[in-house]
Length: 100
Image 1 (cartoon, rainbow, N blue to C red):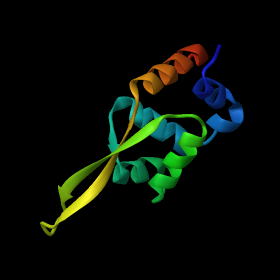
Image 2: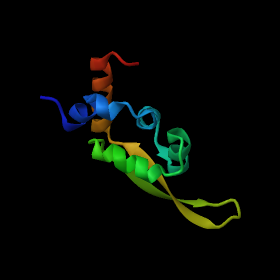
Image 3: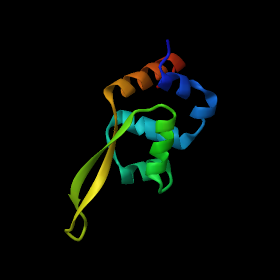
Image 4: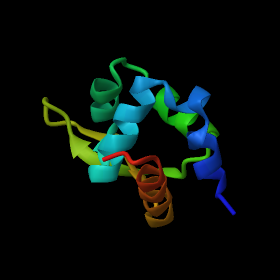
């Protein structure tokens, strides 16, 4: 039986969005900061893009980290990542579809 992720992402309507596909590919490689998601996705609403991917069934988590901004002030940022199970399902789906 296919998982919810495989079923949702296997639908042509859900996999045509190139922004989604770029972010999924990037998250498979490594966790990404919110700013990276903005750049990779091609627009500055990374959290909205992540919410859309979650609606498709992806289990994308966000870890809050503390950083220093360029002026030396402490601030918080989010780092998005996929769970191991999610990564496995995406890779299995890619194999079934013959994707690289």
